[in-house]
Length: 126
Image (tube, rainbow, N blue to C red):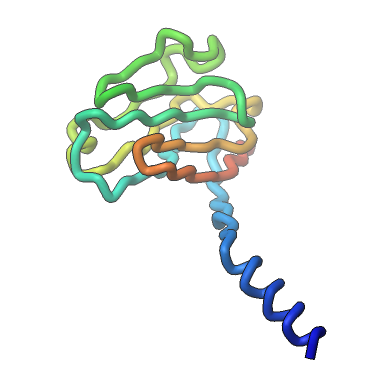
């Protein structure tokens, strides 16, 4: 009986944590890709979204509904854009232009107001 209870406790504990699905996006050198990110909140006011590459490189920020590239990693300068007209519908996707091989890696979109993190892998091919 104690083994059965232990097994049930493990299953319960495991079900409390969810692992986000990893999305694979394939792009080609010189082309553009759109990295998806969306929110259930249908407003841009007060929303903060942080886009990061390989956990630390700052790709793009949307702070209180306004674009902020002040601290953007220099490798992404003039190559990123979002869709401000779509913020009000909860779309915070990011377009990455003029792809380079060094763009390959993990990207996260962190919507701080909802404590949501979307994770995706970008593979850039020649």
